[in-house]
Length: 245
Picture 1 (cartoon, rainbow, N blue to C red):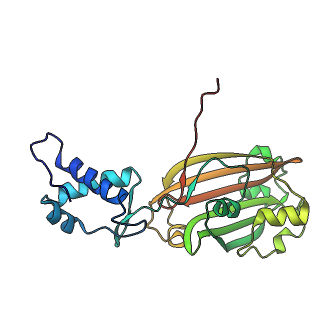
Picture 2: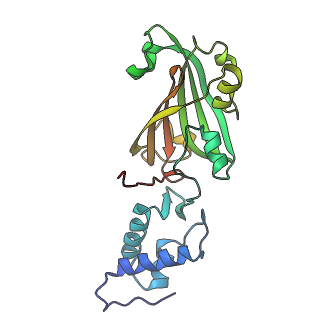
Picture 3: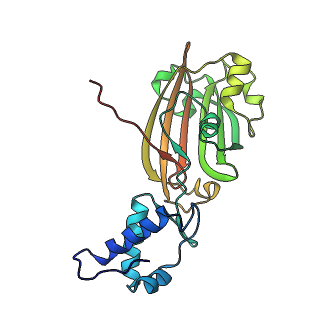
C-alpha cells in the first residue's frame, strides 16, 4: 500500500480515495466484498476516521462503493449494467448480460383504468379493465427492483389468470397473443426508495433508486405501461452518445 504524502498539496482524503480506487481496480476486494471499517482503514493509512469517511463518500458518489445500513461499505457489483438494447423484457435483458432473472408476484389484480393513473397515450376509457401485475425482479436470488405492469384485459383475455412466478410476461404475450413489441418510451428519474418498497428490496427507506416509466407499443399501438423502482446499487444504465452528423 503506497504511503500518503502530506506535503504534496493533494488533500489526504483524495490520496486515500485514489489509493482505494487503485486497490479495487487491482482486485484486492472483489465485487460485493466488504471493505475494512473506517477505523481499520484509518489505522492502515495513518489518518483520521473523518478523512477515511470523506474518501469513502466520494467513492460511493462515483459508484465504486455502496453503503449498506448496519452492515458496512461494499465494492459495488457493476456487472448488471443496462446498455444499448432493443425493446426487450427484464428477463431477456439479464440473459443478455449473462445473468439469471427471477420474479416473485407481489400483487396480481384487475383494476379499472381510472384507478391506475395511466398516461393518456394508452387511450383507454376510465371504466376499462386492466391487469395490474406487481413483481419483485431478481438477479439470481438478489432483489433488483419492483415492477408494476398495467395491461388492458380487453385485449388480453385470460392474462389475469396466468401464474407469472419466474415467467416472462413478454414471452407469454408473444406465445398467447402474438404480441411483438416494436417500440418503447422510457423515462428515468432518481429518487429514494419508499418505505413500502424498502423491505421487499432489502434496503433502508430513502436508499438511492432509479424510477422508470415505460410505455410499450406493438403494431396495434400501446399495449403496456410499466412503473419500476430499481435498486441504485445493483442496476446501472450506460448509454452511448454519438454525433448525429
